[in-house]
Image 1 (tube, rainbow, N blue to C red):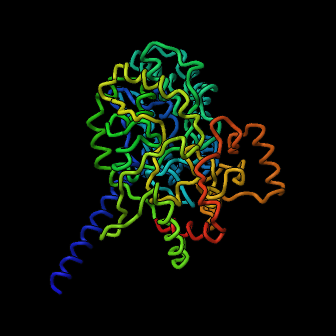
Image 2 (cartoon, rainbow, N blue to C red):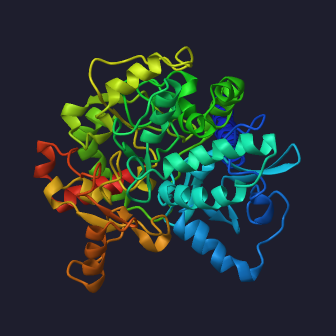
Image 3 (cartoon, rainbow, N blue to C red):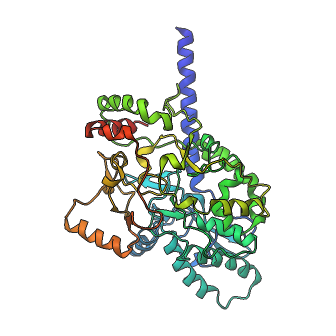
Length: 472
């Protein structure tokens, strides 16, 4: 009995320690950026000096004046899709450098998001619109830096302008908010080779991936793709590499990148479902899940400390999952450019024989809507229906807010068919409105991830599986 008590106390201590590490990781990730020696994901110097709300979260306790809140949220949250936490932008910092105030984007600007009204570090941002950010930044920064001659200013300004010009390029940028174009990262390697990317790369739009479980996930692939594994730490730096436009930057911050991934990202835990769960229904769903779905996604168990046990996810061929293949179109040309680039030594591509996807662990899956790598399916319920029966359009505005969360279907709320809102949104979808996801757009297809066994599921079966998935 004495030893049992000691074991239980020990497990309690381990669980508490993991909880503390997770809480610390959440805060540390909020404050993580890679600005170094004038290089990083920046905006043109001194713009941030005049915008009092561009500050490190909780850095000085100042609040946005009441009369600015409306404009502040309307632009930064509603227009650009950035997360506003306690009246400040998550992941947007003001850094003092050589007498200048440099606005710097941190990791959580993209890899932090809301689900059911709650913000989670490590969850992909559901509402960000990098194209709109780029369009406005190009105009504002262009005017701001037109007459400046200071060399230090011009060096940072030039990189910031390149960043905004590429993400606002209509030929390769995202078409819908909540998606980010992998294509912009590829432009770095074209530039490194002295080549033009025009007409040579697809948009490769994907939703921002979640980060918990990354330690195991990297062994199979990098984020969504599994054409090559992501075990080399440099691949965690893709967006920052493109934005900073600097081989020297990547090499200089590799040690910090490694420490940050191992000591912060690896300690991020998946968020628990915040509402009631029907335990009886969840048990029925677990049986169905373990019988079929687990063959790709694996069995989900918790350790004695109560926390998820992650495992290396499986590689699934594109020919099997059959989801939208836009992001795979120019893979082999991209691969050749990386392998011949100036940083090929720190970005090795351990290529597989076939292209495909990571079948991720499903911890925190309730928060990761909309589903599939391109965010083309609004809920878990719809994901278990054949593609022809999935919604063809849905609203992404305020996607992370609680009023947009469907507790039964787990995902986004939808307008009732033939209602006035439904008809208006369909019209907006056909007109190209960036708030409305429309599966007929390039790279937006909701095909795939449907198998024969799923056609035998009743509505009750689907709802029971969803109830089980809420427990993960």
